[in-house]
Image (cartoon, rainbow, N blue to C red; front, side):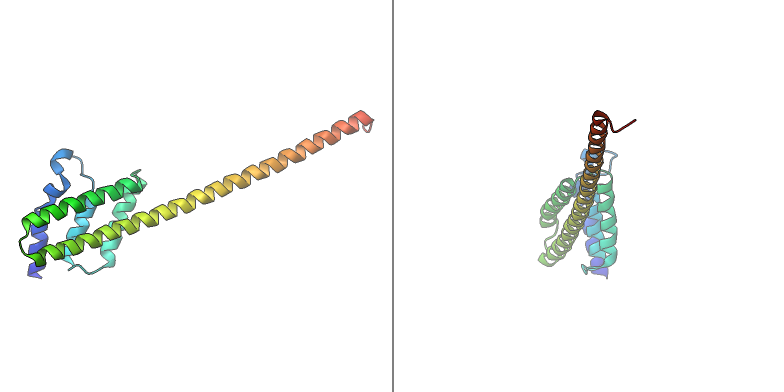
Length: 165
């Protein structure tokens, strides 16, 4: 337990460097949810825990709901991962510590990719359903217009032939 806590603290020191917080001023830097998930993964010992997935899923889903594209979210996660790898190589001399951090970071990156892919599939399904509803409405409108056109033609024919009195 002590080693995990020390590792979490050592990685948390890298936060500003990895997220480049100075560039973003008071705003939260992109990829914060990825770095926070990494710290949670390290604190639970690198095992896949539903709590990690649920919290990260919620954070990523919130970003997508607020208008970030899947591409942007994945790009931010990749950026954090790449910067973290450089920082970990520089900051940790013990290969075992490096591997623990890399393993946890990989787990977090895979989780982000899974959440984004599920969101993309869900969005595509909703888009397809909306497109199908629109096509069905267009067909129904076309049917109604065709019936009205036939009724008007029938009425015109009746008027010309003297069918109305």
